[in-house]
Image (cartoon, rainbow, N blue to C red; front, side, top):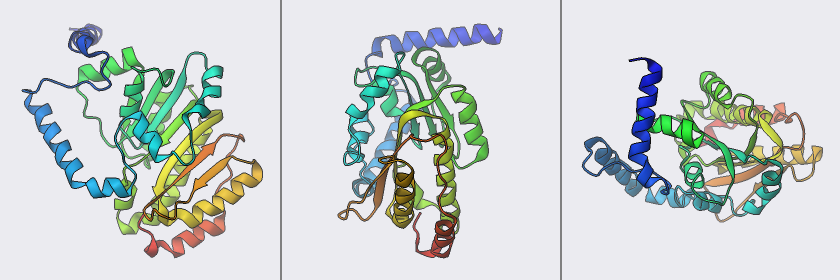
Length: 278
């Protein structure tokens, strides 16, 4: 059987399995399916184990509205209206460091008009038929791997092709705080490099939302002052004195090139690396 006919068969299989559930934000397999039942139990255990951590990291759920709640102090969904008016075909949206659940949900709702959705996360557990359905029917693409790896970033850029990002949310579930201490500073610098890459692929006035550890607050404050000196309201940092765990910030593309972090701040970050939990 040719690869084309095999792909066609899988796509037909996807339609037959998912047609009756097309209005649901997430597609669930049969309860008696051993693999998916086991996965569901594993996910339930993880959620139970991380209840306290979720609360401290502002994790309120996996859907679109729960993500917006994390960024509620710095972003209102109405800010996307001008972008949707310009992008007649719909928005190009990205879930960075997440599986894209909120994007797939919005493909079946009317809060956002989405042209294409992309997600970058560590692994892809979807069966083949769902991958084909997502890409061919929903225009949703998932790139698995370490986002700090050049190979993963290159794969994402290849998948993105000539598209430009309208809207991105990066809410990494507190995972960045679990990196080995010896890699804290390196990954902090790589994070800002990753942000630069995303910025370059963002449309003018596109909106990028990020959540990160509060230990980076001094660095974020320095970047805040630097970026807003180039263009007012380009960078918005939320410093919630009541929350000791994370910070959120909004970056709007106002200039062609994103000014880099001051070298002195990066050196200071290396000097203070033992104090960071990033």
